Length: 175
Length: 175
DNA sequence: TATTAATTTCTGTTATGACTGAAACAACTG
DNA sequence: CAGTTGTTTCAGTCATAACAGAAATTAATA
Image 1 (tube, protein in one colour):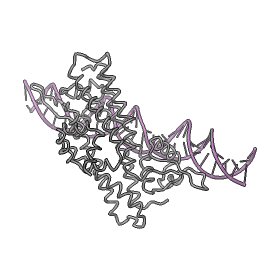
Image 2: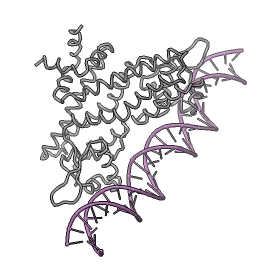
Image 3: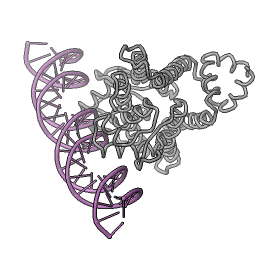
Image 4: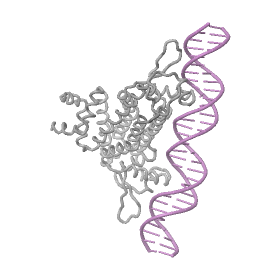
């Protein structure tokens, strides 16, 4: 498959963005490609289209599957695995948030809790202790809020976003 | 300055988290250290405490200043620059969100807009076009929403977070 | 079961960027 | 202005992780 210049720009930029956020470039590129083409592709075709090694594609596809961002699909009369991703950006966003939260955010919360419970904690230094508590409390709140937001359906989240800063007025009504 | 084991754990873990999110490890460690100690530190002391090269600290401090995450402070009778960070996690969070948004999110929006306006765009492929539009629309909404949220004061954001999933009921009242 | 197709694993290479230590620079002090 | 202190720049080293290509493995077909 030959990508037109626009598709190339899209895929390449997505790869660069991935790098800046701690995502392997090829992984990000493959996902962008699958999103763009919008239909299942076999690994070989991805390899040719992106011009990277077959093994690289294989590992990246596995990574994307671990992230629940792509699915394997089969096509009648074709032995090969085909890969596809959701075309619903909201869903993709939610998956990424959920996965990153579980992999990196929640473990950090555990570490902070451990820190506060540790016998090595300097009980004298009340201020440092308070700051760790602050950080922990903040992350716990954010975590809980995130979980609840992830449960809402896209249309609801959309409404919330559209409301934007006006949310302030609503919150004030509660007082 | 000798860090007790808890402080070490905190700083080291923060460094690891930074790496996973595309932030240089030393940069993240220094910020964690300044947050933990809660008072201004000169570069030399940071160097000794973390056990890294002086030049590394110098560059990382500059990076943190570019991010508006630390401030230079002077102490009477001491020629050296001292560095300090806010102890308000909300403020720190907002700064990071704002900076990353401006550096990476907004430029991506520009690229997507360019893609859609490009004469190279394959006008035949309406579906691919629609997907790019979807992605762009999503990011634009998120961007606008982010800007407005960043303007709200912490207490307001706190309330919004505490409300959590119940926000759904409020949104339904609007219909 | 032999053959082919498809995928994964493994080993070595390469690219990137973090990091060091020395040297240069700048600012201050007596 | 010489000497001292403090900071930055720079060139080279090192660590990490991405990546390529070959070999090995697995699965399907005939």
